[in-house]
Image 1: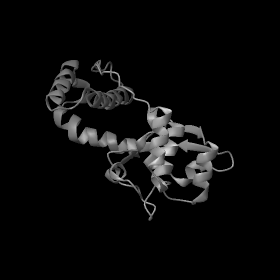
Image 2: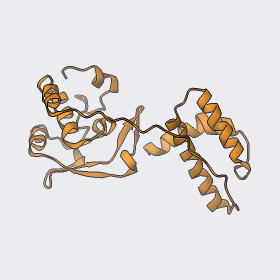
Image 3: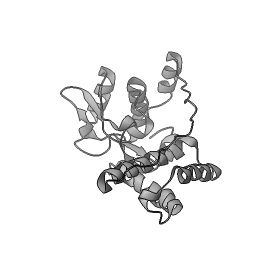
Image 4: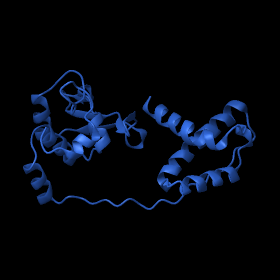
Length: 198
């Protein structure tokens, strides 16, 4: 459902307005190159444009299969600089945890112990934890307010360390978001980034 929403948003806001009424079997590589150039001029990053191209490619591949098209245009992705990762050292992790408490402490501890992403962390629900096997399943993420698939579009199963398991077990619920509001709703991204205490 989440991926569908994101794809529909890209189609409605970007791809369809640009391609207009061009029949799908008449879309050319030149048009695609012009699309890339236009979106780059609009200020979109290469990674974002590549995401658009992925959706377009999926549409073209489906059209080829469903409509028995002879061929579809080749799509060349834009170059994207490799992302830089900055890891916290042990002392920094300990300092961070010493200066947080409550639900924020739990969120940070889980992130440090599992490497789970911010959007995935906010999207966790209580049924995602198997209390018998102590396994956390990452099934979804939150991106720009939408529920989408997690990293690489695949579920991940992560063992919970004793400390994390014990802390979460203390306030175990049957439903709702693990790190949600008192009403069990998703915590707003800005609230998490500004928070010092919950």
